[in-house]
Length: 244
Image 1 (cartoon, one colour):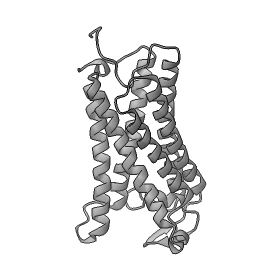
Image 2 (cartoon, rainbow, N blue to C red):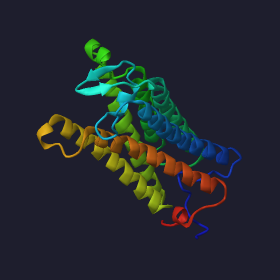
Image 3 (spheres, one colour):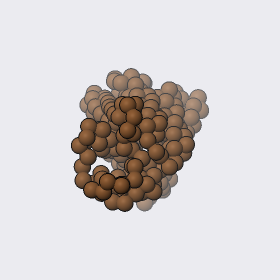
C-alpha cells in the first residue's frame, strides 16, 4: 500500500466531520436498499399470485383491486411500498450530499444533481400510482416520467461515481464496478422499452428487465455503503486501496 496514494472520492476526510458524514452516507444507502427489498418482499407475499418476472414493481403500490393491462392487481400492503419508494429516494439523495461534502469528488455537481433527480422521480412514483384510475385521468404520464427519471438518474449516479473513482485513481474495482452496474441498469431500461413495444420479439418478461434497472441502483448503493463503512472504521480492504 502506497503512502502517497491520492485521495479516493469516497474515503473519509481527516477532519472530525469527515468520518461522520461518510458513515451517514453509507448508512443512508444501505438502509434504503434494505428497506426496499424487505418492503417489496413483504408486499409481494401479500399480493395474490404476484410474479417478480411478469408484474411491474409499481403494481405493488396500486391501492385498488383491478385488472390492469391483463394483470390482476391486488396489493393490500400498497402503503408500505409507497413509503419505501419515498425512503429510497430521500436517503439516496441525502447519502450523495453527505458523501460529496466530506471528500474530494471530481463531478460533485453532476453527482448531486443526478441523485436529486432520482429522489424526485421516486417521490413522483410514490405520489402518482400507475393504477387504472390514474390512467383514465391521464396522470399515468407523470408516473412514467417519475420512473424514467428515477431509473436513468439513479444508474447515471453510479456511472459518475465510478468515473470519479477512476479519475482519482484509487480503486479500479469500485470505479469499474460502479460504471458496469450503472450501464447494466441503463441497458435493462432500454430492453424493457424494446420488449414492451415489440411483443413479437420479447426476450424476457417486463418485470425482469425493470428489476435489472432498479436493482442495479440498489446493489450499487448498498455495495458502496459497505465499502465506506469498512474504510471509516479503519478496516480498508486491499481491493479498496489497490489500483492507481
